Length: 312
Image 1 (cartoon, rainbow, N blue to C red):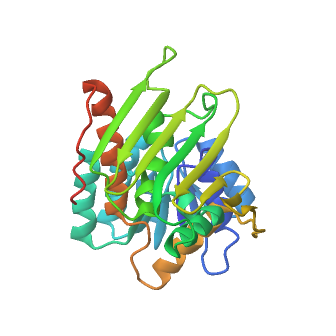
Image 2 (image 1 turned 45 degrees about the vertical axis):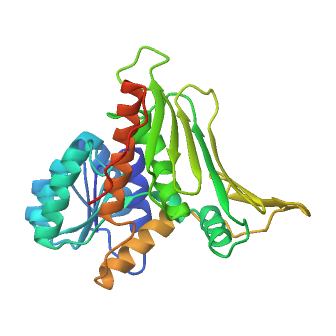
Image 3 (image 1 turned 60 degrees about the horizontal axis):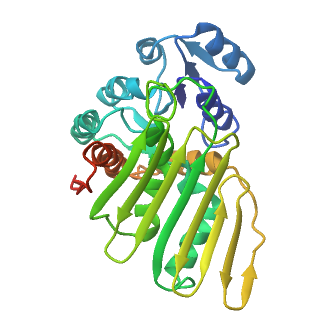
């Protein structure tokens, strides 16, 4: 394994790979040589300043791409052309157009690839998924997610929709097991910034609705999911992994073992590579999340609902 891009999130990928029994972290890559060297010394692996140098000097099976979103397409393309399997952090690419081009390369070179949607691996979210599937909530009518915080200290090159909202756009499809027929959104800049800092997105499904609220304006960090059904309502705190279900008999909060979602995500990725199986979520699902994000932007510009193209 190798990790390309060892900023805040890439360091976490490298940390976890270095502790795995069934994988070996051989190198980290970053244009900031000091950051790469410092981390490599701590994790006892090699370090490089470019992807080209990594590919020239190491034989690697798979890579986590944790570079800025605007570089995902370029970095991933080089790995794909060399037959390297990869996990690309969300969003898959900065634009849907780039993502579709990358998808064609993935199919051409037949590499295993996935997108980093960490919340799918959150134990609390998996509990709610089980409740939905076994009918505990009854007929699901509303998916509501709130993902808010202050302006992030890390440097970003996409706005709040592709950075934050995209998690919940993916989860709505994942939990409801359906494709939205339309997207209506109000997206904008409350402060003088390069990218949008708030988004309120409404997704219309055949039998349910999803509302996704995201911003970089709230002075505290909150990550909340509420799924309302005809028989019960389930609530998740993404951060604490607390989960509860409320019905006419009261409220029940099962005790669940807390596990680091990123650990579970990377374990799943490594297992897929070892078994030569397509890792989940698929690249197609990453493209669909991007398509919904861009549909939200278009809806906000036009003031009208947008029918997203989700056929990939």
